[in-house]
Length: 382
Image (cartoon, helix red, strand yellow):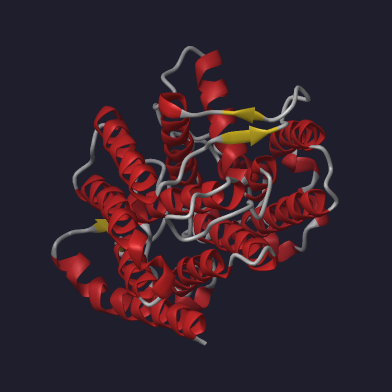
């Protein structure tokens, strides 16, 4: 009952915070305007990230077993949310964001005793373990990857929040099934805060007048929190912390659950590097861009992301439950990633299988090309 109360509190606080902060955001110009790659309509307040943060810290504070870790977790969350809000309002160089993200990763992992100490038998050579500085560096890299993966994913209404919510549900179910009820409670709290935000961000006409964005503050918050949960759920934990004992999932299984943002991140880095571009340079070739260009509408692209996320999470949980060797699971994950990337470029062949309501009247065009007013999608954020 206490865990349910914590989740409900996180939901209520997030929703009330959004309603309260929307006019404040307009007053201080913390809004997203259309232009460039952003084709949404009107000024949209960027308050979702801060509101979710307030809901999360309030809810986690009600999870009694999490209190020993609250200081370190909240410090890490506060740092990425603060950097994200400054970036949303004024813009921050990626070269400044990266060391601050690394600082947040260190605060979170060292303060909570959470490290990537093993990747299991991912390469068919027996379990691979890490310790000392290697474990610290690997953990920081994993956290920074998750932060930037969700930041890249947050390009259209509902995407990052829905992918995160599905992942939190899958991780929470796995943790609860493994007897890690405290970790499941944290998943429920963060999931409830995310669900409250989605009421104001799903691609539907019913929330147009009250719409808000999560901004970099929200996407990085989801990234850092999911990274911590994935590590906590897949590693043997010491007795000083939220969860002790055997992990709820294998490390590879957690990668399945967050597969879509992982595929997006690594393909973006590979694509830009092969073209001689900086990996940090923005472009218009993310998965949602490709789906829109193929003829999907925003709701159609959202459906594709939702279906893929559900399938990947289900596959990860199933492979873990069947005790499929981790190296086979990793090979399958790599193969599925290649298929998904290729499918995004061939999406025009799939759009006809979706209902007319999921399609655009005309294909999306790259920045700089003419876009008829009737075809402009007013829900596309980035």
